[in-house]
Image 1 (cartoon, each protein chain N blue to C red):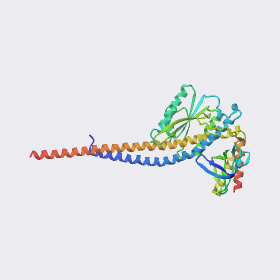
Image 2 (cartoon, one colour):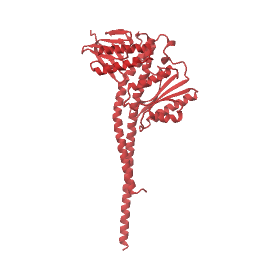
Image 3 (cartoon, each protein chain N blue to C red):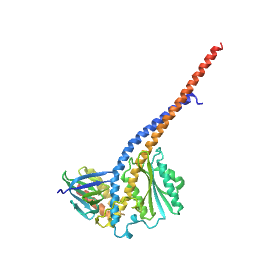
Image 4 (cartoon, rainbow over the protein chains, first blue to last red):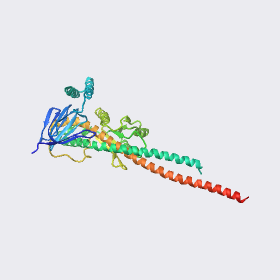
Length: 130
Length: 291
């Protein structure tokens, strides 16, 4: 029996990625990284800034995302996100831009603890990419 | 009767107008294809988002403490209406249809003695509404700079709406936009986005229970603001497709009308030219006869 399932990543503008030969996906869920394999229990969670790793027959890919919702049901994994970048396509300057933006954001005084946590997370992830 | 010279000038002017409307039609057709494509591409996101929310809200444990964005404030005193129109004219009944729909809704609300607040998106709607409801318009947003509808803009509008909701400036929020059906038909829509009206959406909830991480309430309170932006974005996409469709058919009509006008004027021109020739001939003949 095959150990593969389907993944679909959509952003508001289009369907970003569809693959049906995925063996494992690691997503940065809100409460920690989460690996999803075939026949995982149905789950809804949301994501914090981080890296999605997709392991599939046709090669491994990783994407940087800033937010999103993940839903897994009947071996269909849907990820809704408004900002996603393929790390292979991302060059240094793009990363620097995002990092600078995030740092500016975190420099503001009036933000809630939750958004501060998310921004710190974002900065950390971006730094590891560089 | 107009002189030959006048007729000639009119024909030339109608012809050049026809050229302009024809060009506008072509441009609208090209833009329409793009807008339609992005409207179609944007659909999966909003559908998925809707599904997740439906699944979540059916699984929510404590209805009383549900987030206010879902259940409402319990009042319906203050209505906020977001009216989406275009920034440009010459698109047939596109803007007027939305305005008409919105106006009838406004007068209903006002006659019920409720308070009304309006946000307009796009300058055409603002122009038409400020005459009657100028004091009700609290904000006017225009995206003239952005070429196509993008999520970033929608998110900005969504954030404004949510900010106002959180400072309890209104109880119910409705958005007005044109739904794109085909090039000829666009249906003006009024959609309530706060509180979320789940009766409208199809029933896709599954019996299957989900595991939630963190708990339902927290996910919902994170998801709902996003959903507002998503709904607004969807409306913007539909609206831009409708605008181009409407403009295309309006310009098509205009081109055809101009063609008819040119034909009519040409006949009139030829007739009067012939009449002048005949007149001249008669003058010559009768002059020769009298000799």
